[in-house]
Length: 136
Image (cartoon, rainbow, N blue to C red):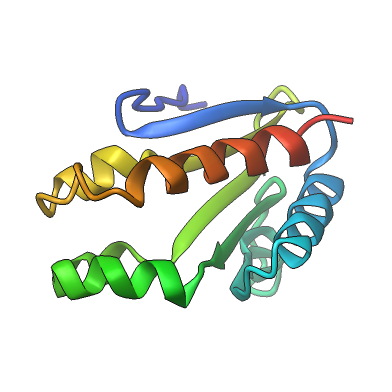
């Protein structure tokens, strides 16, 4: 089996303490509490099973705040390729749950927006979401 490789300079990784399905439900509830719309939910394991393939639980939530994202796109519309935000939650081969998202500052750097005032706030929100959703 292939060994997993995660780029710690590009991704923020958090070891969750709950099963994937419970973690995703908690993440959805946190976003709802913060009035942040979820635009899409991809259950990759379900999609795989529908074509006869096996995949451990793997879900991606896509969400964001148009008030925040629009400001970034006004500064550089090409950042729209990386917006809205997303968090992936999966179960690894050892049965552990992981939460991850692309580091916001690193993503913004690609577009020359690393010094935009909203970036540290976005990063703090994302870290808070995965840490809160991932622990009891």
